[in-house]
Amino acid sequence: MSPFATKRCPLVHPTPYLSDTALLRPASILILSLLLIDTSEAQIQLDRFFPCAVTAGTPTKVKAEGKFPLWPIEIICDREDVQWQVGEESGQLEFTVDENAAQGVAWVRVMDKTSSSDLIPLLITNTQTLSETEPNQNPKDANLVTTPICIVGRLEKRGDLDGFRFQAKRGERFNISLTANRILASPMDAVLQISDPKGNVLFQEDDTLGLDPHIRFLCPEDGEYLVRVFAFPETPNSTSGYAGAADYLYVLDIVPAERFVENFLPLHGVPPHLELGQTNESSPFKFQPSGWVTSSIPPPQFSPPSKVSPLTLSVPGKVGWQWHESPRVEIQNVIFEAMASVSSESTSLPIQTVPFSFSGHLLSPKEIDSVSFDVLAGKRYRAAVQSKRLGFPIDTVLRVVSTDAEEEIAKNDDQSRNQFDSVVTFTAKEEGTLTLQVTDAVDGYGPHHVYSVIVEEVVPTFELSVSGQRFSVEPGKDVDITVTVTRKDGFDEPINVALGSFDNPEQAAGISAEAVKSEPKGDSSKSVTLKIKTQPETDYQGWIEIMGRTDGAEENDPGSTSHASFALRPELKLQHLWLNVKGKE
Image 1 (tube, one colour):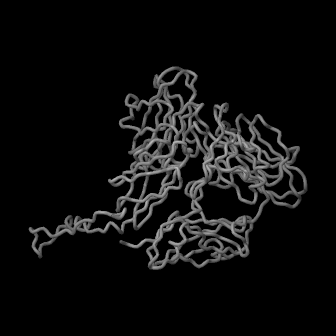
Image 2 (cartoon, rainbow, N blue to C red; image 1 turned 45 degrees about the vertical axis):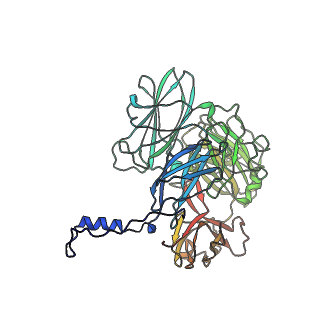
């Protein structure tokens, strides 16, 4: 039997109590219509997993929530260390992750014989996971947990509040971190609250990493402590009180500080000489994990990039992971030779050569981190922060000054109204050495106040983007994909936009698209429409790429080529898109 075999509804015959001339009641017509629907034409829809986090090495039963007209289904996952089994009943799945798998995210897509779903995240942790149980709103009903623990929960209705109790001793330190909006895309602005054994609220935290809260908790006395989770809508509305819904999912980590790594420096990039899987000790380039406890931190584990996620860093035996972006190819070889990770304990650095990247913490009040670099007369330079976009709370201010700090060359706080990472662009008046200063606009500081700054010469470039991660069309028909063109720093060359590679070229033989050109001026300068054509016999579900290239540019030539991307998450640009070409069964 086909893995997509399904039971179809039998034909409904008229009841013998109705004559041929009798009028069917409206309710009867509705029931009859529903029973006659051919489910093979319906679109599969995966909304979420619950639980939405699994422990490496532990088989976990997971409920797929959504619409599945045909069951069983097929699963596509971007990680090779994740296995699964599809249950007999709709929505039943079991995931097993390799015992030594790195922490992070597995991106999962489900398919049936006619359609495909969007990508949905499944978090992978090395800590025991526990699903919350209701009721747990009142302190006396709060779930009792043993740390370290990873709790998967849901604020399922309006007014919902979840509570968890744990034992702690005076002087113990904990990292209490909630993941919801930033990775799971839960439409919630969560709040964490900690109460002592007497019911006094000790801490309340709202936005730490994006809209997700994180508390670093020092236990003042022996006893049982209560952690409360509640939320408001991500987009403020007229809701009065706490909000909740089926998609208000969260993952709550309550972890002793010595087992938690908060972030890694540098925030992005991998040295070209570092092979994936190589440890920090065997590499001449050092990643610096940071947090409350910085001693006895083992080397980080590198998880290779996939079609969805960039390279991921984590530490075996510790809780915490981080996506690690790579800068553009043209500066990658230089960036890591000149990289310096600094904090308030390190204030003097060698003079850098552009391009380079500069990473650090703001760990103390009124801290200013500085680095000097050489410039050439008449050349245009840019220093751009990567921090707020990655979810960190720092509100950076960048200043470029003369080496004696008497002349200010450039200064910036927020890049734009909705882009809070600072960027400065300036033209050097003369050859010499300048100094870059990094501070916080509101004098914020702490272990989450981390940043990376890329300093490079300004080169005209362009970016391509699309409004969806998945496109569907019936065989023999066409689908139009609008590609938005963003021209930067005066880029004024024609751009040829075309289909790139397929993950299964033989299966995609019937798919084609004529390249379209984005001219420097006119309507096409800002967007073009790529028309993808299919043949009646086309049968394809898989990845595609859309490429932009200037005339004469070689493949992957930096500044002259670009992959069209979809913003899967604020810090995650998806360059591999999905095309579904399936007929009705």
